[in-house]
Image (tube, rainbow, N blue to C red; front, side, top):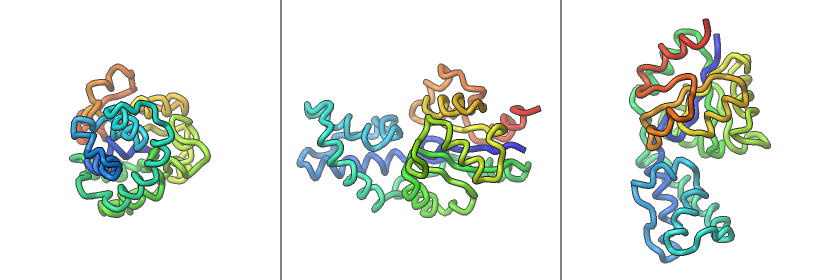
Length: 220
C-alpha cells in the first residue's frame, strides 16, 4: 500500500492562534503593541518570518531584514513556550488517519516547522505516537518544496517514495508533490481554502471524513 504524508500547520491542525501570539509577543517587546490579528491567519501558516515581515510593514518597516532576523529566534522561543494554547486538530483528522492505517496505508508528516517544535506540538496535543515518521524543516539540508523531505518521510515510514501522496494546504505542498511526482490532496477548510482549486491538485477535500475514500481512488 502507499504512504500518506501530511503537512502539519493548516492541514492537520489550525496553529494560527499560537503562531500569531508568538509574533505579537515580539512586537509588544519592541514597544509596538500587537500588530497582527486573527484575520492574518493565512500569513501565520506561511511561517514566522512571514508574520514578522507583515507586522513590520504595518509600521513602515517593510523589508527590514535585520529586524526580522533579530526577532525570529525570539518568536520561536515565545512559540515554544505556548505552542498548544489555541491550537486545535481539525475535525476528523485523527479518525481519518486511523481509518487509513486500518486499510494498510503508511502514515508520516512532512512539515516546514522545525522538527523539535513539530514534535513538541504533536506531543502536547497527545498524538505524537500516531505518526511513525516525521520530517521537519531542519531535519535535512533542504525543505519543502524540495521533494527530498517528502521522500525521506515516506522512507522513514517504511514506504516506497514512488507510491505516496501528500496532504497539504498550500502551493508549497502542491509543488513538493509535483517535484516528487506523486499526487497531492489539498484541504479547503484552512484560511486559504478558497485558493486551493486553482493549484489543480489531484484531489480536494473539504473535511477529513472524505480522505479515506479519496486515497482509495489514487491507485488502482
